[in-house]
Amino acid sequence: MSDGSDGAGGVGSDGGGSGASAASSNNDALGAASEALGSAVDAAMDTLGAAISDALGAATDALGLDNALDGLASALGIDAKDLQGIVGAAVVGMLTGGLPGAVMGVVNGLVGGSVTDAARSAVTDNLPAAMQPLAQLAIDQVAGRVPGAGVSVQDALAGLASGALTNGRAPDIGDVGAIARSLTDVQSAARGLMDGVTSGDFSSAAQAASAIDGALGGQLGQARDIASGIAGTLGSGQGAYANGGHGRFGDAVEQLAVDVTRLVASRR
Image (cartoon, rainbow, N blue to C red):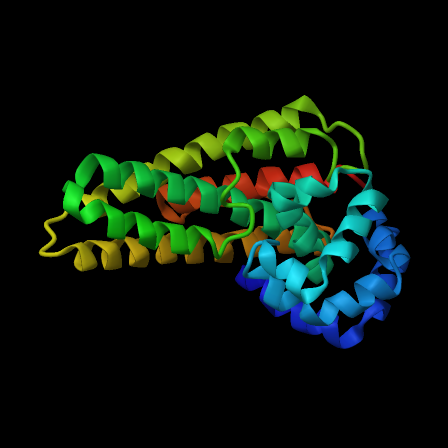
C-alpha cells in the first residue's frame, strides 16, 4: 500500500510522540488507543512499513508486530483475527497516517479486491485455458500486495458495519449502504476494463499476463491517487465530495472514497 509506506517513514522517525501528539490535538480514539499500547507499538513503528506490503500476514510474526497489533485490537474492542481483513488494513493505515490513512486502507482494500475479482472472472471467461494459469498467478501477486484485497465484499462490509472503525458504535445503515452501492459501481467498472484487456489477441501466456499486470497496476495506481485526495479532506477538516472527471472507473472509486471518508468521520 504505497500511501501507507510513505507515511510509515514519518511515523517511524517520530516514534510514539507523533501518535501522542495526534491523539492530543484531535482527541482521536484510535490515536489514543495506539498510544496506550506504549513501548510495544513504539517499537513496532520502525518495522511497520515492511509489514504493510505483506498485508499483516506471516511477516508480522517474524517482525514481532503480532503482539502489538493484538494489543491494539483489544484496546479497540475488536477480535484480533479481524486485523487480517479490511479492518486490519484500516488499522495499519491509521498507524501510519491517522484517520486519512485508515480511509486509504479501507479504499485500497475494497478497490483491490474488486479489481482482482474482476480480473479473475475476465481471465476465466476470455482467455484460452492454456493461458489462464499464468494470468491468474499474475493476479495473485498483485492482490498479495494490497492489504485487505483478499477479503470478500460481504466480509468487508460486515467488518465496517460492526462498528470497529466507529468507536464500537454501529454506523448509520445509510452510510454502510452508500459504501455498498458505490462498491457495486467500482466492481462493474473494473469488470468492464478487465474484459477489454483480456479480450485482446495474445501470442503467449506471458504476453497476456503482462497485459493484465499492467492493467491492474494502472487501475490501482489511479485509485490510490484519487482516494488520497479524498482522504486528505478528513485531515484538513473539509467535507468530502466527488467532483468526477476521472472516467467511469475513477469516478466510481472517488465516490467510494467519499462514502468511506464519511463513515470514518462519523466516529468523531
